Image 1: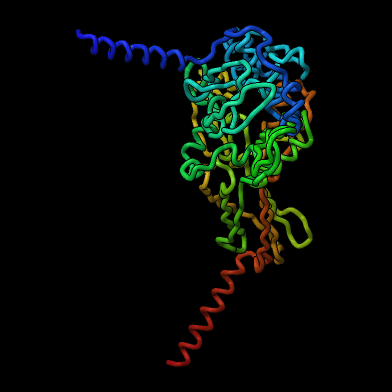
Image 2 (image 1 turned 30 degrees about the vertical axis):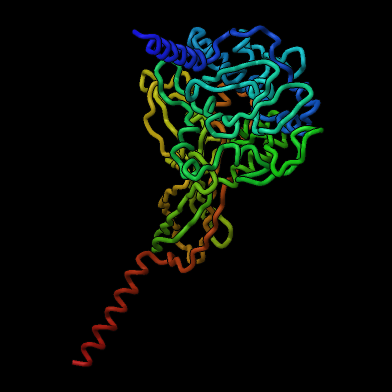
Length: 454
C-alpha cells in the first residue's frame, strides 16, 4: 500500500467514524443537571415567543394531569419499561439529564430540566438520528439553532438551522412506534409526508406556528432588540388537543378550536325520497389539515357525524351519532379513528397495550369520504323535514376519562368541526302505500285513454 492509498483509506475511516458519532441520538442522563436555561430566561428577550409558549401543550407536555396519570399507569403496567420512553418527548430535558419526570416541576427557574418541551431544549437540537421516538441529537450550550441566518444576540450564539424550518424537525416526536413491538401508535408526520402538502412544500410550521389555521403572515420581531421581519413564527403550536389544553389556557383552547373548525367541510345531498324514508349522501372532506382527521394519539381521538332530523314542529323524528347522558356515542355510529387490539385481541385504548392495528378509517389529507344515511319517517309526517349534520370531534372518549380519573374529571369538550343543513320537501307519508295508489290511478287513466282511441 503506497502513501496515497493509506491516506485515502484513513480519510474514509475518519469520515465513517465521524458520521457514526454524529448520528448517535442523545441518551438518558448524558448531560449534567442545569445545562438548560429556564424559559423565563429566554422570555426576558423573546417576550412574545414566551407568552405564546406559556399555556401551550408544549409547555404542559409533562405537567398535564392526564399525561401524568397515563404515564404512571403505563409504568405500572410495563414494570417500568416506559420510564425512559415517554420522557424522551414529554420532558426531554429531564431525560437527557437523567431526572425522574414523574413528579413534574412547576414552571420556575430552579427546575428547568423537569419541565416539558421548551425553548432551550428545542433550540439546542443540532440534528436527529432517525424519525420519531425522540431520536434527537441535543447539544446544550451557548449556541442556539433557529430559522434566521442573520440573527445576532449579546447573550448567546446564534446559528441557522434548516432543520428548524422543516416538518422533519416535528418528526422527532410526532411519529411514535411502540417501544417493544414496533406498532405505529402516532403517525402524524408520516401522514403529512404522504400528503399533497408535503409534495407542494407546505411545512408543519406553516399551519401550527402561525396566528391561525393555514399560513398567515405574521410580521414582527423575534426579540425586543431584533430587526422587524416580514414573518415571525408563533409558538402557540395549537393543534387538536382540546381536553388537555382546556386545563391550561383558554387562549390556547380557542386557538385549537379554530384549527379544528378550519380542517374539514361537509356536503349533503338527497339521494332518494319515499313515503317511508329519506336517503341522504353526506360527504366529509379533509380540506384544511395536512394530515389525517383525526391525528395524534390514534387510539383515543374520535371524529363522527351526528345526524338529526326534525319535522316542521321542531320535533326529532330520527337521529344518529348523538350522545347519551353519560357521554357515550350512539351504537352503530361511524367513528373516524384507529382501532388497536392488545395481545389478547381486546380493544386497546392505552397506547402501551397496543399489539396490532386492526382498522383505520381516518380521512387522509386532501381526500373525502361519503356516507349514506336513511332518515326513517313516521306515519302522518306530510310536511318538510329538516336535517342537520354536524362533524364532531373530541380528544378522548368520555367513558375512558371517567374510568381513568375515577369519575372526578370534567366532561370532555366537543368541537363542532363543520355543520350542514338541508330541508327536504314533498315527503308524503300520511297514507300507507300512497305512492302505489297514485301509480294505479295513473295507469288506469292511461288504459282508459288508450281504450277510447282504439
